[in-house]
Length: 518
Image (tube, rainbow, N blue to C red; front, side, top):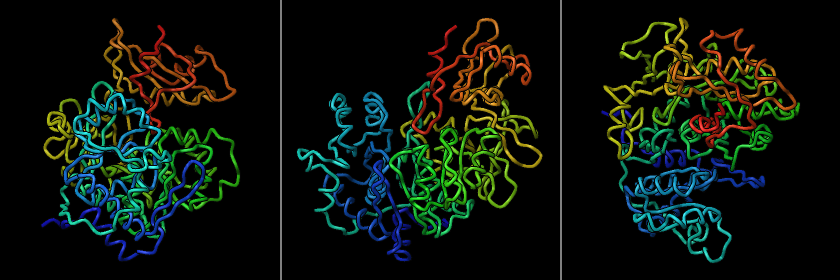
């Protein structure tokens, strides 16, 4: 028997409404600091109304609907309204180009596009190439000519009756596309049970309580905000705050305005926050913890915790793993230079290239044990080959390298694709990056390998300097030589003003390869 029963994120919402109907559930602050708030019951009513709008537009159970939206309360309303009628959300990045959107809408066979007025021009050139796409609805529409397709206009006319649609816990709720580097993005299918499991697992791991309020500043089209903050809040009957975009200068002040107690960041946003002029008043805030992912130096960790009086917890997870299988614990010693240890319901192992488990302190690929559609993604949409390569014999192959120490804590080594092969030796890009970033003049570094006829690959480092600091390539090379084995020292260091990044600040290393000046 399935101990979760036939629970869905919609039945969970109804359950919490009965317990906390008049409690503030969702707050949204836009770029002008205008705030809107919904109680649990008000949110459910809005979900039911928009569900009926979607049904009127002919959206049926199993249909895919593309969301091309910045963060907003109506992003969440759209997500739950689609789930309410058994349709499937396909969230996308507002920075995506027309050609990228043509692939995502076409590959997902989306029948409806939900976007904003300012993005309409993007879709004009590709509209004729999308035979499945029937209609477009608009959030925040000001132009009178688009009134009949505007969210607010349609929702005011709709009734709040609960749709008569049979839902199943195994139904797919969303298809989240992971960014591709050498191939097209792959769509991760996430079920009701995936979301329920994630809410339960994360809420217990970070002790999310009904009094907590999570703050989502990272883009909602990614799993981070959905998995690690929204679902735990709903699971325990807490609340959630959302900002339209991340602001390094405003982050702490946003947590104070919105009375947030839990945050989630990546390494790049942490560095951006630390680069701002420090306001000593920011040390007084409501935060009790901030979870984060990706590498941050020990000095930056210490600086953040001291300046803002809040503990950081590094975690490890992917869209495919759903819940983060590894986390630094709340109630045990933390080492935020590492990615933690398995959560209570998690099982992780490391294997070498021969498929054998590695020894302590030996790097290997991270494998996460899981049940597809329950504790890990159901699979990749319309890509059985990639699914079978990624999920084998109950294990999800992450493609990431880590090592485990005697204390049972895991330490990230590198993405497998970021391992540089130099004269027969494996070099982890992240190791070289960390050494470069130890120099006081360096703000951030990114290291890549490029083909080299003699040594397999040459090591190229791109460096952004701290404001008003300077250092020569020769001095940085000397810095590396005193701290790295000879074969790990970069062949070339290039100084740049910025890195190409994804919407959550991840450096797009495949684009850096086009910038190499040999």
